[in-house]
Length: 151
Image 1 (cartoon, rainbow, N blue to C red):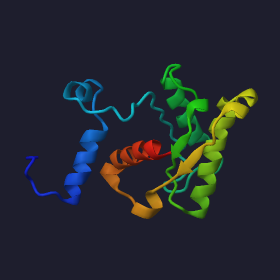
Image 2 (cartoon, one colour; image 1 turned 90 degrees about the vertical axis):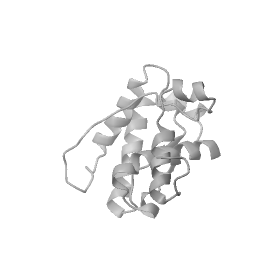
Image 3 (cartoon, one colour; image 1 turned 135 degrees about the horizontal axis):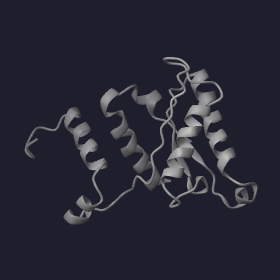
Image 4 (tube, rainbow, N blue to C red; image 1 turned 30 degrees about the vertical axis):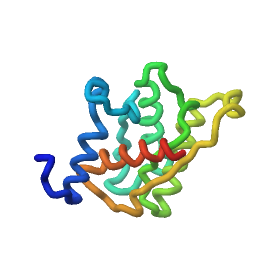
């Protein structure tokens, strides 16, 4: 895309996608600040229902725990102070999302650590912005990075 192209919503979405997920050497080489790093990734699938989440939250909790494990010791659940939740502001989804977070934390945080941890902040933008399909991950990453800078 040429730099003198008109700026549209699609242009901004493309820009977010490109600037959010750069290899570490790229921002260093061009002098751009590093705003965040992906330290670990976790996946899971509960195959419960096409749109409804599995009520206990085991699948999503497993993904959170796997992401921390994938970070190979560079981060623990005690280091997590903000979660950009997937919830869509539905009665079923909101309760399950909180259950998922509680389950992941209960399986990884130790009772002695609770006194020293900062409050966990949780928010979600999907209810306000809707489903963005192919660019949702990039925009959620950008919003999470910016929330981390504000909080």
